[in-house]
Image 1: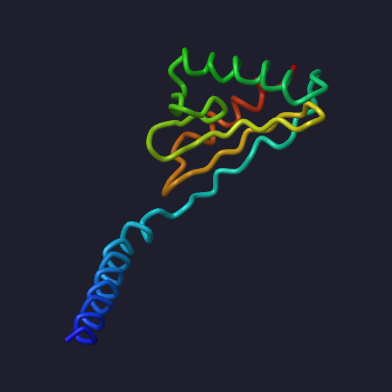
Image 2: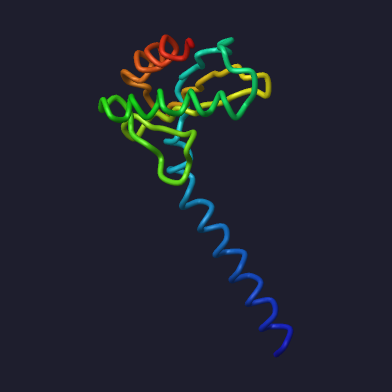
Length: 123
């Protein structure tokens, strides 16, 4: 009886895990990444990572106040445009800055916003 219960419980766990994996496949298949790109590294007047963030993040906050992008809660260096595009501000140790654009499905007009950000990340 103990052997039957062990086999039954292991089989139940395996079937449940398989069902959860199969059930999540359509969601994973639909989350295709679009080609967003990056602004590329911009050499700016800052010479370290902290001062870079101190200058770059207010630029992004200004875009938030203009309604071009929205903040991602809990991540000060991450912003979004709609539900498909995420902008990630990255500062290097030497003070250079770049903004990566990651798109899910279509980027829409987020590439134009990325170009605008690129022009603003010159100080």
